[in-house]
Image (cartoon, rainbow, N blue to C red; front, side):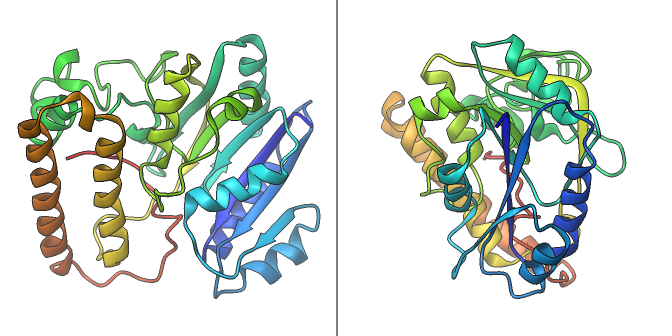
Length: 303
């Protein structure tokens, strides 16, 4: 088996169906399997997937234990040389699998790769190529210096806005909406950290992959469409909380020992303040229609 495609579903029946249709429409010479992990959906997801896609391996959970744990379940039974994390709210092109697998085969020191990710309006999902959210990178991003000086690498350490999105290059981290990882890499660094519920686990994984000596590469010769949840409507408190909790987890795990008590205290205070402001602003937004946690999966760990 060349590649195992893992899709986590939580009440995103139609999005998942559209994603699966695009996967099985792929024009590729490689063999692939699709594993869908359902996190206790209350809609008709399970019945619909079983009916429309009998070739899919479906794991049905009795609880929603998060994006990281669900993907790890899929990895445990996967057989592919590569593992692809693919969001349920994405659509791949016919050539996406072929191009990305070919790239990985030709670059054996690359542990993980990602293609260009576009939003429905054609704009770039900036999370698809990022630097690590160090305290300085997060500071420049949070206070708008990255927008004021878009061509200055110093102020664009996080979103790498100074780099041409149509060129390929190594990066620090990719987005969990589309991340292809070599099996040997996973065997060395392990799966996703299940302490992260639905944000930050992709950045943490990339950090551990690079720390182990593997390369991470952005390869825009193909792309996918990512139907992210809109930000104009009210989000569940759970989503806001997990987003900010992930920031604390990541900093505590990878940066706390590198910085003094003043820097660490400032980081934690900044995250706490941002959480309070996010909750307040969220209350002013119109009520949002029911959406899945996975369709809102935007792991942009920042202050």
